[in-house]
Image (cartoon, rainbow, N blue to C red; front, side, top):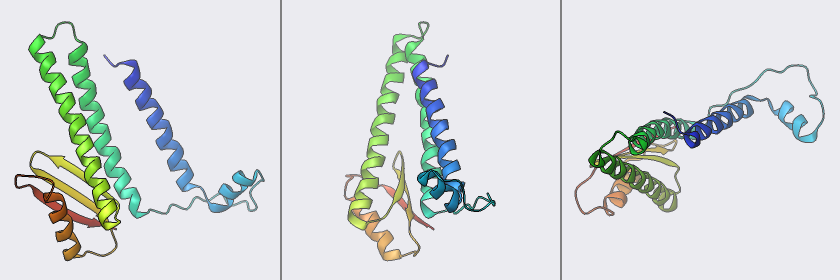
Length: 167
């Protein structure tokens, strides 16, 4: 059973995603005419799609958010199920807390990379593995090593950190 809050979230998120795709595909003339409240100057309504580096990071984030949302909905279903045992509910609650902690840690690592290296990034933490996708035109080994050292300094145990540069 889908709860109302989750359904509203998915509905609004889908609407925002569709509107943002529409905005990105609009031509400059059409966009400026909408902002100026004037009709378009030319009759060609051809949409130019410019794929930016950040769109890769956005796609990764959206994909990860969808997975996390599905998993959270499954866990919330267990929590709200009357037939579930107390142990199942406790396990589901612990997993929900772990998901929230993981998401917070990923955001913290992204902020650290943004602050220290002035780079946009996507971080995925999975057990002792950390995957980092960095938005950069140049594939700099020294920068990657510095990012790995910086992230590893936050952990007491050895983490397996990978850095991938995406354009």
